[in-house]
Image 1 (cartoon, one colour):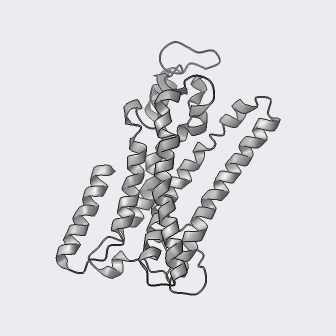
Image 2 (cartoon, one colour; image 1 turned 60 degrees about the vertical axis):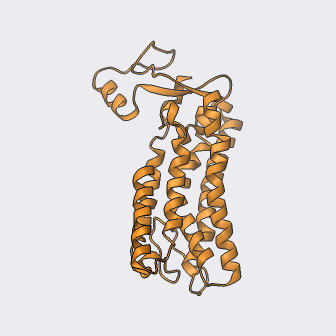
Image 3 (cartoon, one colour; image 1 turned 30 degrees about the vertical axis):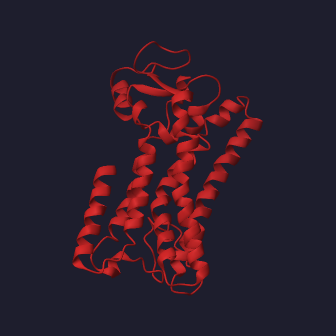
Length: 264
């Protein structure tokens, strides 16, 4: 179904603010490496900005708790809209699929992944209460597990549930109900979205439901979705390394530059 056009694109772009925030924490001065749990965190790391308690890690704790809550609230709202459309729209399941749910939650997930994984690693490495370190370990473990789950449930399924075809709006044979774009409109559309489109192969609404995750990728490069998340997690883990010597500083900076440059 060519109606899969209109997907959100540039999933990797959603990680950019988080990556830029992480870069700020790379430096040879330990104070620039560690997140200060008693000071406000960058909005890219912790959008809500509310501290939890009055301890030294109050902002880290706030981010560790509220970042997942923020993502869950977005996902529930999207799911609620999909359920409402499925029940009350004449189009039923098709209308629900066009909400892009649950794949639409991938966008805020990417935005929050960098900061949340960084916060989890910082709490785990902190000298705070045991409960804080346990929370940090749980948050970091969830951040590490999420890309594996997405790869298993979505990325690996792309080859059997989706394919790329000519976009009938600008290329190939016209499709029923899909208006043909011409002139400057076709040029602008092609510039923004390209002249090829992902569509669901077989029955169901795979692309409509999960396309936000992979539609920005070329057919043989869908694995880059997982690579992009690994990039964020590697930078997060490296950012909590506390170099004690100039050699360690150079080594860590070199690794961070290599990871960011190679995987970005």
